Image 1 (cartoon, rainbow, N blue to C red):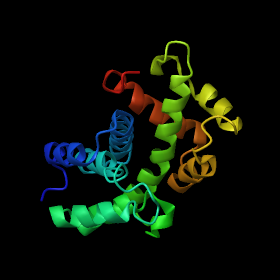
Image 2 (tube, rainbow, N blue to C red):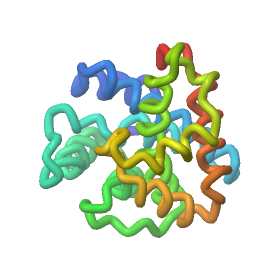
Image 3 (cartoon, one colour):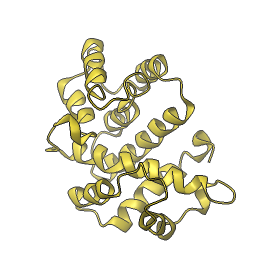
Length: 186
């Protein structure tokens, strides 16, 4: 299978995921991965499909003992490359996949932050990504009661592993999500 085939990835994604918020999250991560691929002069199609499929198994297998390992098995069966599968595994620290490539570091860095930026957007008066600024994301990061499930330490660690200042990292992800705001309905 061609790891870059977005249409096949969308078919696989929709076969395993029905939750619209989870689908939006994966579209958000895809967009962030594409932005970083361009920034790092890498293949945006390959990186984008990694982002698109990183959580495709989560709805059926939300337990950390299963996710993303079950998804890796499915991807292997579907013919995805080992490099592709290992990159997806790297988004979850508990999977034990070392983040030893730029793509692995990036999927880890953007995953939590995409979810957090969307959460920040949803509490804005117009629920619009155009209203969200880096400063407002950083302010909400300090509020431990807000979006408690989002691991702020992983957001910070992800930016550090990419060697991208946190403000710039938030700005990159925000730009990525704003570019697909209509698809996200935000």
